[in-house]
Amino acid sequence: MSLREVFAFPEVVNDYAARCTAGLVVTLAVVTMLVPPPVQTWLAAALVIGFALRVAGGPRYSPFGRLSVHVLAPRVSSEPKLVAGAPKRFAQTIGLVMSSVALGLFLGGLTVAGVVVLGVLVAAALAEAALGFCLGCWMYGQLQRAGVVSEDACVDCADIWARPGMAARN
Image (cartoon, rainbow, N blue to C red; front, side, top):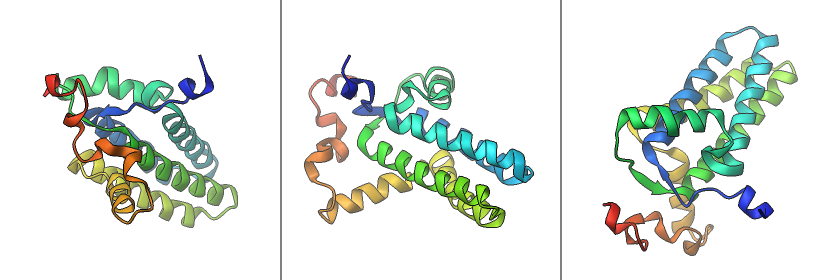
């Protein structure tokens, strides 16, 4: 297996699983915001690791991702709602950056600043989990429209059903 295959992100993902994962992130981030500083740092590190694992390979390496794909999402709907993977990876990368900044702030003793950063992360993840609005995906689309992200980086972002073999699932 090549390194590229090890770190491959799925081209399409189940939106229900992504929303369940976002709900788990909200829960862990809120708990992180509420516990005292020594524990806070460890939980923030767990958030960072979770985001890093999801960026590296989607739900394959992430405990939250696995739980969402195999247990939670099937309870939400027996039929997956497939969406393009590239914007979701972009959103996970933003989560990785934000959780890393929060961890760095906690390690530097700037607890209030770390909690504020996690608060922004919670707001974005809550919008995904509760409303189905992925802020990172929206930003990805805006960057595509602005020409910052090549349109061929995610041809299927506008309509994944146009992909060969996907129409049969619709």
